[in-house]
Amino acid sequence: MTALPTWMEDRWEHRAEPGPGEGTVYWHMPMHDHPQVIDLVRLAQQRLAPFGDLHMTPLERLHMTTMVAGPADQFSSGQLDQMASTGHDAAHDDLERWIPHITVCYSTAHQPAAPLIAALGESLPRCDIQISAFSLMIQRGPERHWDWSTIATIRLAA
Image 1 (tube, rainbow, N blue to C red):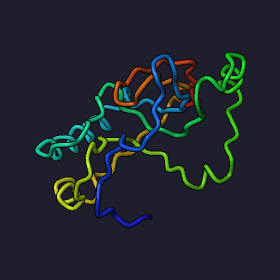
Image 2: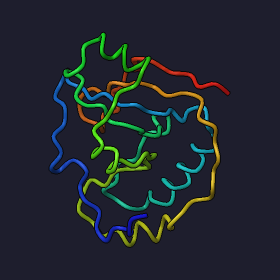
Image 3: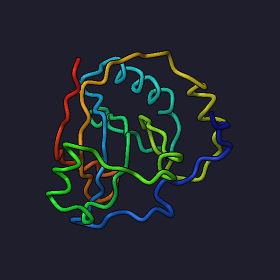
Image 4: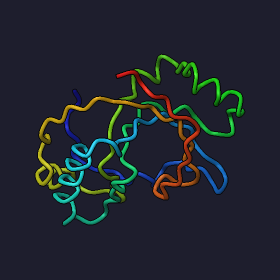
């Protein structure tokens, strides 16, 4: 567990973003079938709504990001098909840094974290869900435009 931050950074200030027509390949677990998760995120976003400089995740786009596979132009359609059937091995270093998460919002400015943490609290009520699918997605253009297309959905056995 990491310590809570003291400052929020502008998510996009120093981030290279795909240009028009470019994209990034992700593995996501969609949350649209989990109303209890949507309710928790709605609660968190309501607590954060009085603050400026936050870009809220649209509730219809809620997902748990499990892996960033890389720039879309580095994968052929055959490779994407293969990923959808066998997965993709990430470098060990990437796995150590990556934490699957559900993004409630992004900070769009440098700002103190303490007021946001105080409003949100250090935790939300526990919510157990059963993941039923993974989706291989391409997100085109800047993240904040939420322009996704689904390449494949992998259903998990109950």
